[in-house]
Amino acid sequence: MMALLRSRNTMFILAAVVIVGLVVSAGLGLFNAIGSAPTAPAAPPQGQGQEGQGGQGPAPDAPPDVDVLGQAPAGLSYVSDPEADVYCEQSECVRLVMVLTEDGELPEDSRESVETVLAHLAEHGWEEQSPQEAPEGQAFLTDGDHLLADTSSHDTADASAMLMLGDAEQAPATP
Image (cartoon, rainbow, N blue to C red; front, side):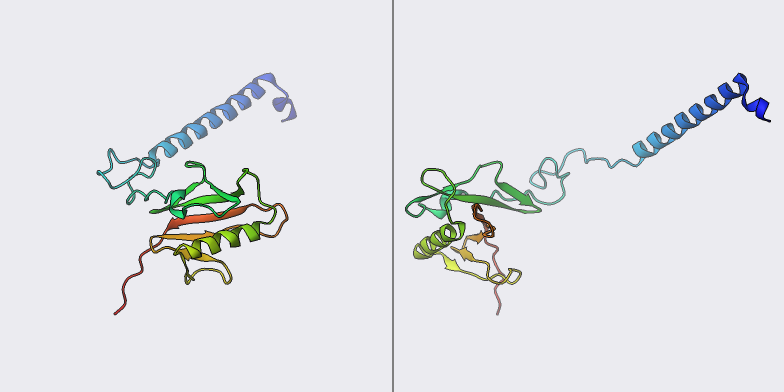
């Protein structure tokens, strides 16, 4: 038996069987993967989907622009990248707005900056709101059409002052 395993012919035959087995296994896996791949619909109905979503539901609304916040408080400014700071999930989008100094630098105290902005907006007609799913102690303001939330992490000294701006959901009227 050992002499048979030491033979060159036997080694070539074993190597060929292993290689053929690997090729057949890979081929079957490839055909199974191709056969079970999801197919995209030919063309989603107009207004029923957005490219990349496969036509599953309505396209998300564009997030509110930073301009809805109005003029920033004295010494501060609002900054938001129109593409990088927009996040969409299902049918709604939000915009992240960073609060910076007028010079474009991070404020020394993010908590104080956010409180200044919230107080400024409250003076200009924004009202405090407490959504049911909101964590205790998190600040929310609304002007009726838009909702603003403090998403900053005030735990570190170099934390940025970040606000999340989105459309306010219209609650159904109760009788």
